[in-house]
Image (cartoon, rainbow, N blue to C red):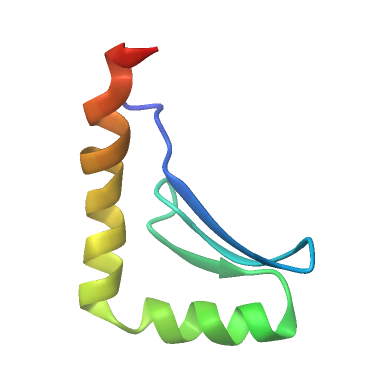
Length: 66
């Protein structure tokens, strides 16, 4: 169960702007705009805490369903 990863990606025009990865525990930007958005979201502790909780709420809750 430790190798399960929650990824929340944000796209615009088929281009990935930024994503949250539960293995890193933070947002990573892939474009100039995405880097700014990642920095903004990483500086919000409540938002980061909520995204980290999504791994447990979404992924681990559905492990045996497939």
